[in-house]
Length: 139
Image (cartoon, rainbow, N blue to C red; front, side, top):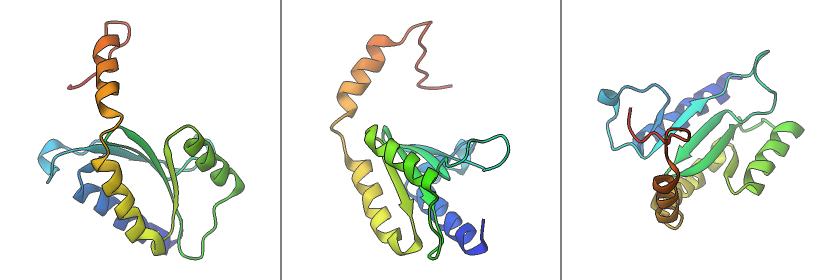
């Protein structure tokens, strides 16, 4: 990953933390605001499928993927295909450039305030959880 893309990644991660979307493994005592989301960083390499977005997130019950690019970067055909498939599956797939950071922040505000799916989803989780299908709410 190019240096400018790595710096942009850190800026996005810092913003996610500021709105309560914390990286996998973040200890509770380091969370400065109420947690409303989770994300993990995908590292490309020999053991990882190619074209998986850089950040996989769950924000307020929505699946959000973020493929980070420097201003001069371009997504591969596989990255574009995977992002399109996430959107076709009713997730939110984003290819994000530094120039789109303010729009990204507004999109995250919308995802956080959206409540339309939450009530029905929570009822379904309550009804279908059991020993063979454990939906863990706390650990």
